[in-house]
Length: 384
Image 1 (cartoon, rainbow, N blue to C red):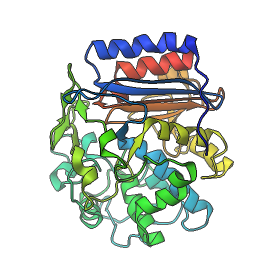
Image 2 (image 1 turned 30 degrees about the horizontal axis):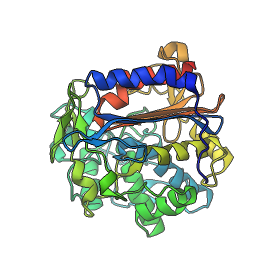
Image 3 (image 1 turned 60 degrees about the vertical axis):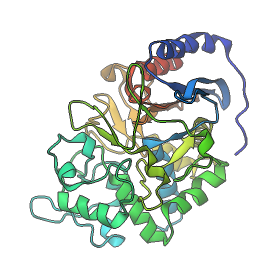
Image 4 (image 1 turned 180 degrees about the horizontal axis):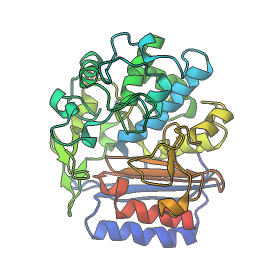
């Protein structure tokens, strides 16, 4: 896939620039990259603030970020590519690939499918979605961004010991499902998850700065937590979240080859790379998946289950949430919009109807994901 052609929209810049400037002036973020696509062309591109405050390093358009949950749609595309080629099946039981992965519900071991892992309906959870005494916290289950050096065997063992939170298919709960799915992919293909994603997604799209390792450490943005001003993360850092246990980070995890490749949160990428991926999914799958599969990714796959992290009006497709009822959601995004974010400080959405794409990558958690900056930018882009 070639470079996205730039066609700057001065009217859009006049609306977005003050929003970014205010977030910087008020110390809500350290730095950010914002990209907006309109009908396949880049209408807005800005790098603002600092990639590393202490070093005085300016943010650049090609800065590399720890991707957190921006990992999910890219791994999802790789998984669906494997499904299209008949390597795996969405309705295969997980135990076909991971025979020892048998978490229990009510004393029984129910069947969990790859589809349920992909759509967060398997009965699994995340540690940060639990109180401090939750089972994942007690057993040391990793959310894919902490505990450097933890490998797949021990992670899967701990998830199995924790058991299920509901019978598979009975509800929706944001979870480590993509991590389990990554382990299943490795068993199904006999290759590392990073190799599979590179072969099936990133190399096809020319995404040189996206992977489970950092391509150029000199361009890696330093990780910060909300301030104001933003606080640099140390070796470990916990960011408060929804009166629960908090989101646990270990920014250097990505440098540790002994860490399992987290299909839910383990990659690094640049904003232009991720924007190119979104545009590919809008443009018939970009040769990664078929046009039909790309549409399935943007279509609700979870029935009437409540998407607890997004609130009413949302469903969940493959790789992100789908806007079903803007009035119920109370957000300006149009029906059919596909969106998600990442806890290191990112948010994105696409609107297939208007062929609009939006990427915000910051180095500040959680402002760039769910704070005023992301909400105001998305509203302005959707309203424009």
